Image (cartoon, rainbow, N blue to C red; front, top):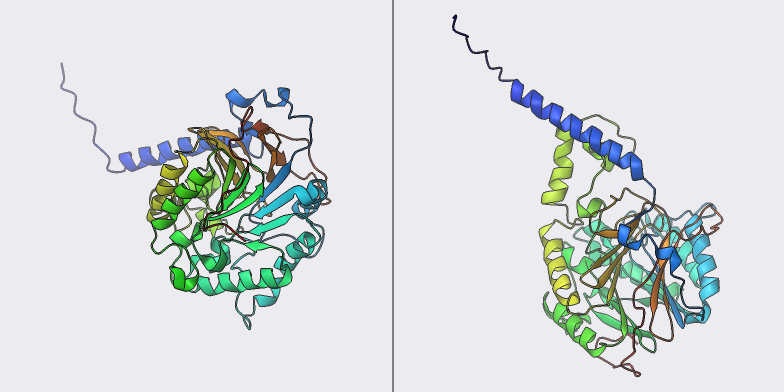
Length: 420
């Protein structure tokens, strides 16, 4: 029997197989994306949400959580601002609007004399004009874009924005003040308190305020987490909403989730029309963002440390709600009886992956609202516009955070970190 000679091994075989495997994976991911892109996802455990109605009585207090308003329309009707106007009219004096940062794109409010100053003021004025007649409370937070996208001179940009907001809307709160890390507590109603953190402080490059000399209660980067734990202890038995710009859970880009387009056309991350195909090489960009991350990504070392320390504190206080923006979509997670929201689609939308640890996600403009009732119940509701006039869509998700909650305190403590 003749002896069979081995087939020659091609050095190109393994690279070709790797490219083929990547192509199959990208096709599969693209098919998955097409199944749920821009469609609301609700986890199986929560799909009977509409069968449970909220209490018939009116809420005692309502909180609007809206982030990333920095690209709202300035030359015509804006769908989210018009929807927000409807919410403000419904909530009235028993309402609080929390603006979750990235209030002015692309780089916040520059110092006077900067050529971008006029456009930045216009974007902020559109928001302030809407909020000026609101009889409830208005709370502004800052995000990475408000700190000049985290650049070394970002602190000066933050101070410009804080000064501008308080000059043109003196009744508003800009928290934490002076760019400090916080936390700052703001009681909203009997049994309901808002605690604000400046999460950008931990990931910011360049100067950052710290210590009593700069008006901050913390003297080092770890002390705010100790102070947060102390505040949560003082408000134990209350409904507590902690607000910061950066999410602690996310199924979107800052959480390491990317579309097939971002793998094949990575330059579109810098410019939306840069459709230069870079297959294989393009996948290195999402891999970098997932593993190492830019400063605004959850995988970045500074962000990762901040997230870990915050989670260590929050997990000790079941029932707390943590609300953020940053990713341009709506997301809700329930992890260890702590509720995590992402409400960053005030002026932009971006891909969000269905499933995983999420209870609800939707790639759609809009915001979340929290309704607080006299018996202690706290309900989450979604607000999404259907047109430029802000006509509200039927709710795609609603959830009770504290059914049967019993208030244990009747008077608000007055910790040193409370807002005036």
